Image (cartoon, rainbow over all chains, first blue to last red; front, side):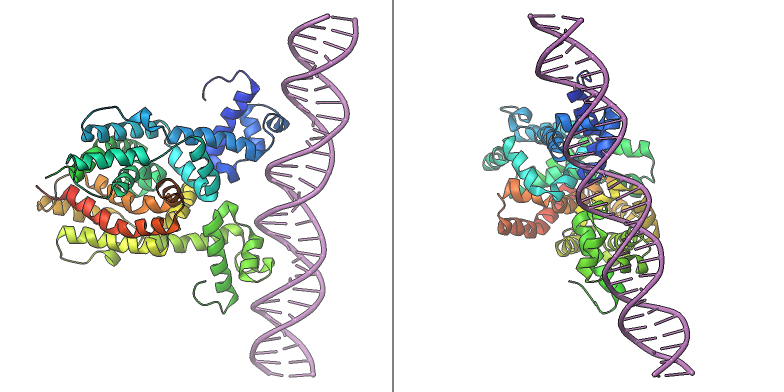
Length: 203
Length: 203
DNA sequence: CTGTGATTTGACCAGATGGTTAAACTGTGT
DNA sequence: ACACAGTTTAACCATCTGGTCAAATCACAG
């Protein structure tokens, strides 16, 4: 389903990613991963010592994907509103491409927060630069003054939550009409941007 | 930890709730539930035929708690802005009292959406009345015109997501300072209300 | 007291699961 | 052709887990 499947290790990583994302660490079965990779179960232990180690490898890659470095998202000097639009565009594009990320990460983070903490440190993710940019925009009067931490959480909530709650939205809002649900998610990029900008613009 | 613990069935329900919420359906162990209830494991099967049946009983109660009837939240004739404030107040109060609800429900909904669908129907939950109230407020010009479904998802996202992502917020935003995290959550009621009202008010 | 049905328990079972191991296979350099 | 290291496999193991059951205990009507 993904990239190169030539060598065994990549076949395992690819299969493990699919199974872990679908079933989670606890729900996944080593035999199922072996089947998906088309190899013998013992090979999983040959390449990765244990289920935990294999999961670590997958989870680390996924955290790196979902917590991008700030430099990768922010462009240099532009109005703050453009920056907000850009960050929402970029992150919702990422989530549309990997809609399973929020539910998977939330599940695993709540199961074992300490593992997540280590990975955040390992990938060098920090929220400070974002808070600084937000605060500076407030100082310049580009946006209204408010607690920047709450603003960040507001925006991330609106971006991420609907993906984690996709089955709920699909059923409660659209009676399991998959096309309507899909259309709704495609609209959200514009809707979130408009909502946020209206909330933070002066006057 | 909860209500009456006199009869065995209630002891089981109470213990099962604690364990299921902490570990989820898959992570929970019948033996652990029995220990928590201070009874023999076979009694679990005597009162509830199987783990699935026991989980159903717990999950149903929790869905009923998290998806309140509309009448229970909305007061009759008041300005729409007051209604929004009231719904945010009420729901954030509920979540502050049961902060585990979002993570637990999201996990189980994504594990088995069909069970969740049945429970939503069983509890007679419907989003239609809310959408109607929102649309009427737009018709009266009380708030700006926008897609009411997106507005509802915006508000629910900002209310619910931070609880599901509490470990992330606790670490990334507050370096595991529990008091700071707690204070942040107590601020959110005001912050969400202000943000939403600013985004939807005319002018 | 005594009988009877509901409740409770310890012992047990079958199946699943992560993990191990010895043997077999593969390819490559000499 | 052969040796040797890396790779792959089938069979196996220990443990855990949901579930069952017969026996024991309890509560209460007669």
